[in-house]
Structures are given as C-alpha cells and as structure tokens.
Length: 304
Image (cartoon, rainbow, N blue to C red; front, side, top):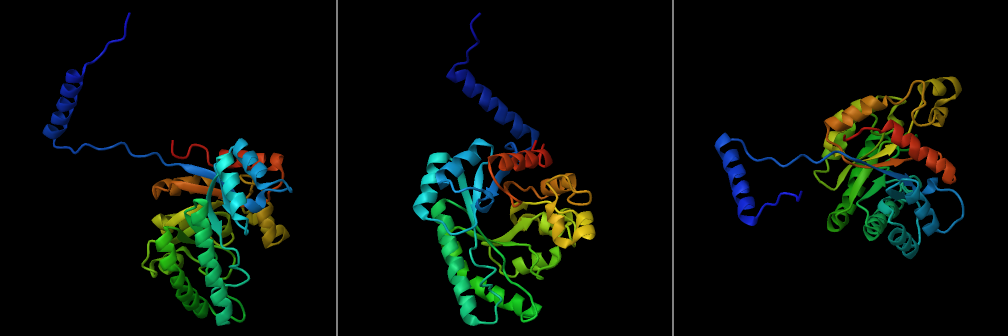
C-alpha cells in the first residue's frame, strides 16, 4: 500500500488551523527547549608522546573527544592544519604566563608583560576558532596582599577587555589554589564588578573540593560559568597523605570527593550547556581512552 500524501493546500490549511487553535487558547506558541549538553574535551598538555599535532588530534577524535583547550604556545599553522584535517574543535586557549607573570605582581613591568600575553592569547584563540581564554587572574602571597591582588588584577584585565570585545573571545577566570577568590560569593562579585559580558568563570570542579562543595559554587555563580574543568579530589587521601595527594584520585573513584550527581543537578538548574574539559593526569591513547570513559560515566545522562 502506498504511503498517504498531503498536497500543498492541505498542508497550509492544517498549519493555519494549528495557529488558530493556539490563538484561541490564549497560549503563545513555544519552541521546544534546546537540550542541555556537555561537550567533552582535554587539555593539550595531557596528550603524551612526540607525535605530530595532527596525529594527536586524530587520535583524540577517534576515542571520543570533541575538542581541545590549547595550554601552551603552539605553531599556528600546525594547529590549524590539525584542526581542519581531524575535525577536533579548538575551543579555547589557556593563558600562557598567568603563573609566571601574574597580573597582581608588584612590578608594573611584569603586569604589563602579563597583559601583553593575555591579549596575544585572545588573538590566538580567535585564530583557532576558540571562544575563550582561561586566566588565573591573580596570586596572593607574602609579597602581594589580598587587596593589592584584587585591585591590580582588575585594573590590568580591563586593559584587555577592548580586544576581547572586538574578537568576541571571553576571558574566563579559573578557581585555583592561588589564595585568591576563596568563596563563590566573592568570585561572583569580582566578575560582576567588571560590568562586562566578556568575563566569567572557567569553573574547575575539583579545585574547590578542598575548601567547599562544587554544587554550592555552581548554584552561586550560575550563568557566570562559561566552561568547566573536570577534575577529581579526594579529601580522605589528602588528609592521609597530604593536600596535593587528593588530586591523585581517579575521576569517580574518590572516597570523599566530588558528588557528581549533585554537580549535574546544579548544572542543570543553571541551564549550563558547553565545554567540559578534563584536566587530569594524561598519557598515551590507552590512558586518554580511560579518561574519556570515566568522563562518560560521571557525566552520563546530562541533558537527557
């Protein structure tokens, strides 16, 4: 039996009837809400071996990654060739010098060099087709007070905002162990004080477990979160063997670490869709495949 057909007049009549029914109901027609999605990526520094960039990119694509975050200076032509021939997306760049030349440094020349590199990273990200630059905004230490770090870093970052605006590449601040922005409330305030859509949070889930709960940070930062770093931290290991040992726990295996179901609930509540980039111990194809599979397991079901 042949399939039923509908001619153009019937189609138009059906469409008109549907619109009329919506109008009579008093309810506006609503488009289906887009599904939330996490796009899986890695940091380039996680990829071991001395193979050409193209071979690394193809391998990452083959084992299930959609993208990569470039976290060290690379030859532009090699990155573009690898991107185009592999189909792996370069979604962003990590600022190349934010630890060595922090924007909170007491020396104005060091801060100026830091701004110069930040601007170059913005340009590199744009050239790669990326949308962000990850930045550690400041470092508090014996020689730099909290107030100095706050004021200096904001002043220096503002110098790069015109470039960010021009290129449509955002500057996202990572929460790290830099003795700075130690609560979600303060981080939100710091971001908001720029009064710019070109800044936000590159939220590292594992980095806050030592002194907080990721789901709390996510709920507080909300739409300020632009991208995620996926990392585990185990408080029990840290207590038994030292604070940095907490990071040695594999994704999903911490005895007292990230509550991944609670993290996913919080991300859904804020409507997060975007890049989730592994930042853990890397290695060869087998190791990166394991990381990919672990990410799939802890992030399973998101957006369904």
